[in-house]
Image (cartoon, rainbow, N blue to C red; front, side):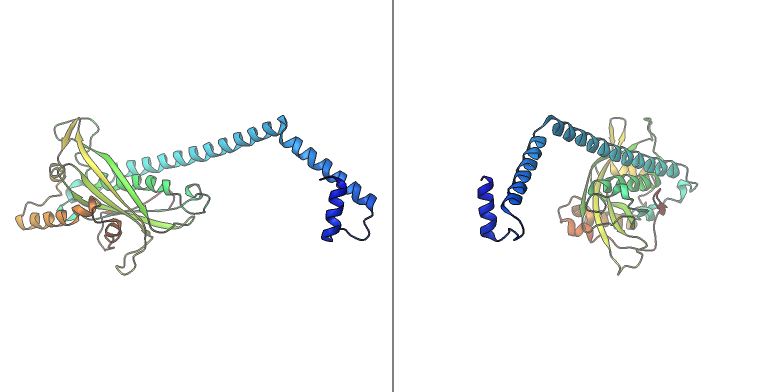
Amino acid sequence: MGSVGYRQELRRSGCQHEWMSDGALNNWLMDYSTNLGHLEAFENSEEMEMLKMEMLKMEFHSEMFERSLALEAATIRFLRAFIRRLTDSAPPKHLSPRCLFLPAISATRSPLIDCDYNMHKSNSTYFTDLDMSRGNISLVLFRQPFNPFPGPKHFVMILGGAQCVWRSEIVPYEKYELWTRVLSWDEKWIYLVTHFVKADVFVPGRKAVFASSIARYVSKNGRRTVLPEQALSKCGLLPEDDAESAEVERQRMKWLPVARLKSGWDSVHGLFEPGELALGRYTDLWW
């Protein structure tokens, strides 16, 4: 459409002001067409392509820096928990079969580097928390035979898989806790359940589960698999009394379908029951 066509269209639509003469309108249309042409030329120019490349580079480096910072923080958090559990003064003789199903509570919060563009805790960062929490309980219950070097009485816990399902968001800097405990075991795997819950939830009526996770571990002595019952027995977590052994077996069989996720995730969420007894409460670097 030429300038004459634009002028006629403006007049028909009533957009032309009374004070704007034909000459002024022609000048305005010519300037508009010229600027529009310059803009289209710049968008298709080599300078614009270079600018786009620089913006992509800046975005890439910014994202890599953020990921590197989050990875370093996660490594420091895990090493801190690992070293502190190995140097705990509580002797292994305090462990008994009554500790088998007790939770280890890990207290932390959601820093800004763990949040995504939706301004809540990113789903991927839950697994970093799970590593820390499972490390706490593993080095409490299975500390005595733990040794990275094979020996007749040594074994290590190897993570075979983990799944997590989310129920509600965790906002930036919100305090929360991870309750991790042994749920069940079968002929190969030991299953751990973890619940992300609001901080300081000790009253049974106040359930506030953010997310739940099921993880399975296998015990290894070199390339040899240590059966779960053997591993638990070496740690002094299985009772010798027949009546107590029958009760432990009843609980194991009761929760095994839940551990294998055959009962759905609602059953996993519903497992959380805060109580007064726990293996310990451990604070995190972010607490």
